[in-house]
Length: 233
Ligand SMILES: C[S@@+](CC[C@H](N)C(=O)[O-])C[C@H]1O[C@@H](n2cnc3c(N)ncnc32)[C@H](O)[C@@H]1O
Image (cartoon, rainbow, N blue to C red):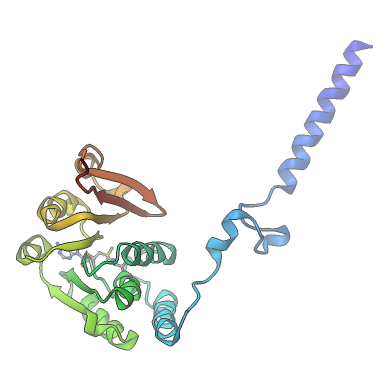
């Protein structure tokens, strides 16, 4: 009798597990794969333009997203949104980007810089991608905020003399420690070092941003966010 009861309980538990597996949905999606109302579903909502200038810039970004991604190694849209959000939140006046490509991430920064009155200095070594970037900056109407510096950034960044609010490192992965070493002294206290795809960089860089008590590092989407701490008492 007892044996039979145990068997019935086991069968019921198995049936429940099967039903649960069959009815499980990916996070943020409702029945039939439609966008649900869960916590993460808002992340799939397209960015909303607050005015005509934002609308124009977002439409260029959308076009680049659809038609220019191939070979450009651009950040995904959600990381672009993170870059804009952080630059706007710290009121960035000077953003330095290493790795312009066709200007996709740079244009996300410009969405912030048009409100903070700031500027972007962006560095690349590849003339083909850079010439596309110039065209994209122009059609987004942000070319007046951008200086594109051509050449090996390990050398070109040594010419920067002004303070920096935000650095975005998104170029040769083995070069990240050198970029950090050269730019950290120029970053103002309370400024940010943002770096992309650090799962592809070496341990030296990870140690440099996580083992220095003057820095605080966390991951937001694909963007590694490092704060240069202000000196407290
Ligand atoms: C991942 S892509 C940048 C993507 C861009 N941030 C975006 O999201 O639109 C990397 C870029 O870094 C550039 N790059 C690689 N090594 C470089 C170096 N030593 N100096 C300057 N640019 C470099 C490449 O030419 C390439 O365009």
